[in-house]
Image (cartoon, rainbow, N blue to C red; front, side):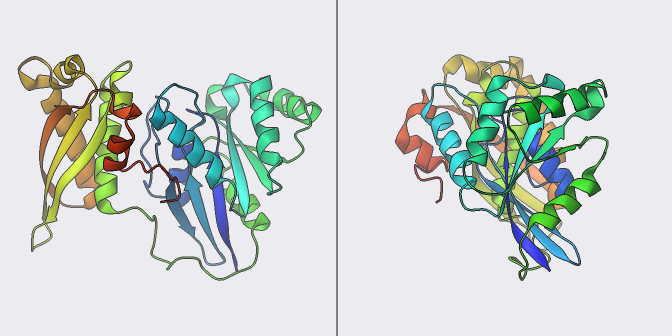
Length: 298
């Protein structure tokens, strides 16, 4: 059989996590229309009768000025250095820029097989696709380019087969029932952060961390008790997160609880507190405390 690791690389908002979820067939990564939704490496495992693909979903390549974003960039870079294939995800409806081809050339320079998933073809003129393919070729990007739509499922089967063909022969890397390397506790924190990203505007969601203090399944397995902290950077951000008479927070927690119940398959009792830690994204000790290690491999 074929098996191997595939690093999923690309600019922020290219659709990497959505594509990984569709390829794996389960939600293993949170998604939102905002940059920096994915902060950590998340493994999503696709099992078929003849192959096992371990997709490494990475933070989007996004330049900003915090220690957290620097760590995220290192995480994406390091993730692409020890894999069997790099799947570069490009947002097709934005066209092809010089910065796009520069990034592609950068990863081609790693000496690892590279393939381009040209995404979001459902929201762009079809005639743009061959023109962009020609632009890539003329820029010296010589690799397979597969146009896909994760939302519509277009060419997903073709992409899977193309990936499998490029992987080495080998045994399964993980048991066949493994879908991700992340714990339920990790995913609960991510679901909470996803709902905050979806419900609040501007900078506030990017300055939020979620710490799960208690995650406990009751003996009958039908109920989970979850207690967590939502950490933001400024007192006025806390006020916005909570809202007038707590309305905004109550609505967000209800939204999050639905997602958690769907993911866990049980009823959830959710308690949350909003706390302020000034500029935590630039403080190494707080980054470590919140799970963003200085070494991306940890």
